[in-house]
Length: 134
Image 1 (tube, rainbow, N blue to C red):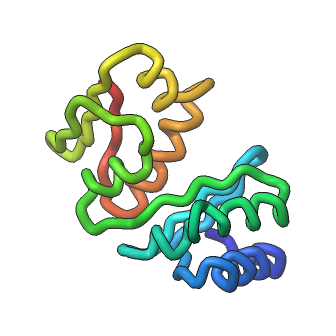
Image 2 (cartoon, rainbow, N blue to C red):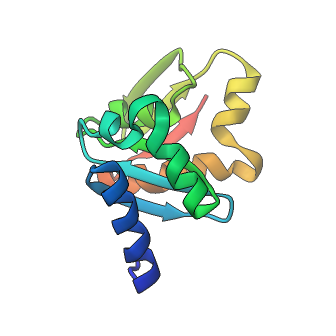
């Protein structure tokens, strides 16, 4: 993550609003992905999602907040929520996600596999693993 003055200001703004420690901040064209520390998700979300709504209104972008976990399978499960996989397994440095229907699979992969690439980048950064959707 390359830090510049504008990015540091955004991170500080979000940390001041949520009172949660930001582990990762990824800015895309249409959304911002934030990974917060372990057990800090409730603090980051706020009561009834108040913090998310405030940040989205200030930055004029959609926001995705997920919680970091030392277990890669729990981290992937947190990241893909609200999609509920049938199984999530780790085989030979590859995390395999099996889903129920085509709609869930499409949401996981995303247009031009955008969502899957985002997940793969995060998982590779922290765990040196790869994610595949079956």
